[in-house]
Length: 160
Image 1 (tube, helix red, strand yellow):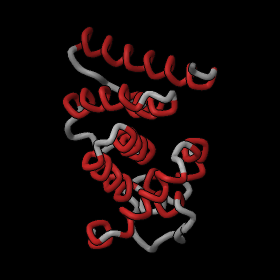
Image 2 (image 1 turned 135 degrees about the vertical axis):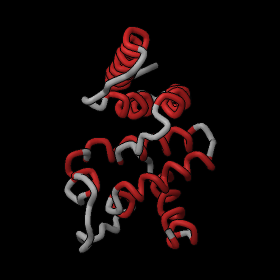
Image 3 (image 1 turned 120 degrees about the vertical axis):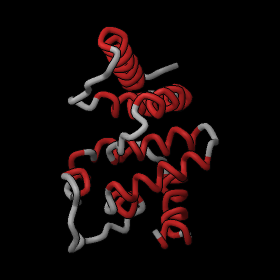
Image 4 (image 1 turned 90 degrees about the vertical axis):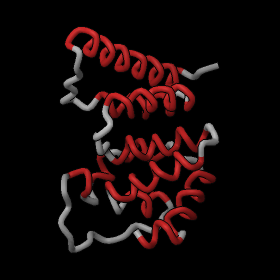
C-alpha cells in the first residue's frame, strides 16, 4: 500500500510524463525550460516505483540523447537502476552524478569536501546546490550510500 507521500510523488511523476508526451505529440518536440523531464525519474523513485523510473529513463535517453542532466536527476537515475539490479547502468549514472557536482557524493557518505578552487560550469555544480536539494538527499538508504562510497573510492572513479 502506498503512503500519501508516495501517492503524491507517483501522481506528480505521471502528470509530468503525460505533459511531456502531450507536448511531443502536439509539437513533435519537447521544449522543457522548467526541467520537468528531470523530476519524473526522481518522483517515480520517491514513489517506490524504480521500475517506472527505469522505463522513463529508457524513453528519456532516446528523446534527449545529448542531455547532460542535472545532479539530483542523475543521482536518482543511478538509484533507480541500482534498485532494479542494473548495476552497470547505475554505476554509469553515478559517475555522471559525480562529474555534474563533485560535492554531492562525498556529502552523501558524510565526507563533505570544501569548495574547490576551480571553474564550476553552472550553479548545479556549486557546493551550495546541495542545500537546494537537501530533501531529496534523504532518499538513498544507508546501504545505497555505502555503495556510492565504494564506487567513489574505486580506481575508475578516482582516476576520473
